[in-house]
Image (cartoon, rainbow, N blue to C red; front, side, top):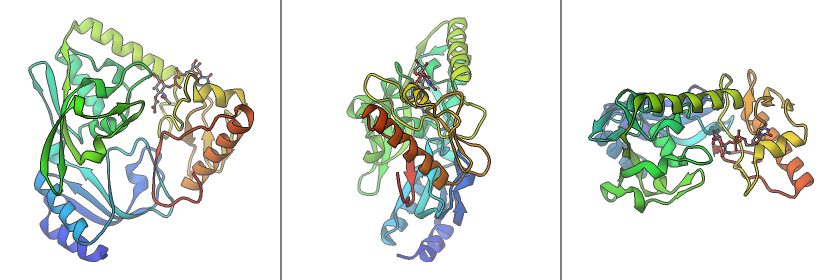
Length: 305
Ligand code: EPU
């Protein structure tokens, strides 16, 4: 495999951008992460197609990211290519009561726009960080509502089949998981909304926002909930009972607002975060016999986690 050959081929053939050794701390909400060998912004479907072909030819691993809001990248970075969806995938438009969104669109913008047009259904997503593509991959949402239930259809791209349209019902949606990313690179989604009363939509949005502000450390760099809630319980509650709020390794700190958040209090490394994750996991295992599973995604090589 040759990163240099791939870089040359991409530099010549892309509308978007390609960079070598891009520090991933610039592309994650944690502001943590070493360099990715290649960092590629695909602006068009042709860019996506060209990129996948070059990476396949050079046998280079890749991953697609949105805003990096659920992601911990290793300090040594990622030996492969990070793909971001750019220009043509950062648009959304109304289609009747539905909203067609490119995967690279910031979800918060869609939520605001739905409100301004009097379309309801997305109120729960107020304050959910990241892009539409990231939200679909994670089936983002709350305990009671998630984005998968609103998906009318998605368009994915694969090297073998090109563009494929899948109906929402053909995708498996689970608690903070979906298999949509395995079906290809998700390029766009059509979200089903319905006409509603603007004052009521606004009230719901304000309620979701206030709740989130009061219960989550929204102002500090983090990657959202670190652990999935175990069946019938709450990871935050379990961790708090162990007195772990404020626990610190390096600059990684268990938030004192919500114990299921680890915040970057300055210059935390990925290793600080993974050490803290392991410390929490083993404390919860010892005290309750519960094995917490991580919700955040890892990219690159880690000694632990
Ligand atoms: N709790 C504590 N201590 C804490 C935090 C929470 O005792 O430090 C208790 C709360 O008092 C409450 C219970 O745990 O009784 C649940 O807490 P909360 O309502 O904050 O919800 P959560 O289960 O921690 C889930 C999602 C969040 C989502 C909220 C709001 C998971 C792992 N987390 O949090 O999603 O925003 O519900 O609906 O599913 C995310 O996925 O990144 C995320 C932030």
